[in-house]
Image (cartoon, rainbow, N blue to C red; front, side, top):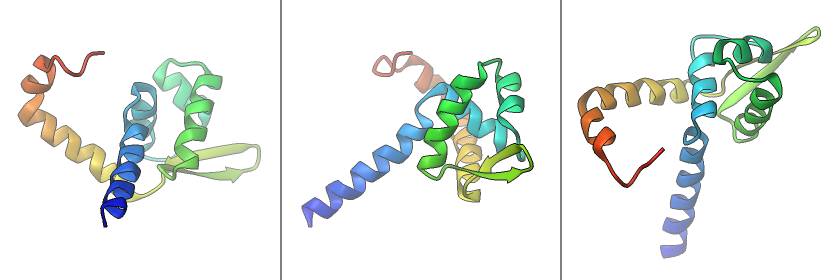
Length: 109
């Protein structure tokens, strides 16, 4: 029983690591309003295309984003509508507890 609980917590921690990087989080926010190409995402985030591609591969592998090929272009979007919902809910939570998060000494940049 304890192993199942630990396995579930490990899996949950892996999910949140997908959200734990600023670039990956920015990519998720970027595609939460619709499909975008790597180029569009890179331009919007002012990041290099190889860097965005690397992060997209990670997000794609773990199912946080999905892709669709159309001709020479590949379009990326949120992999599950609940991910977009979680992003929105995190904004709502931050509205209420942002001061505590800012002042938290345990989570540094």
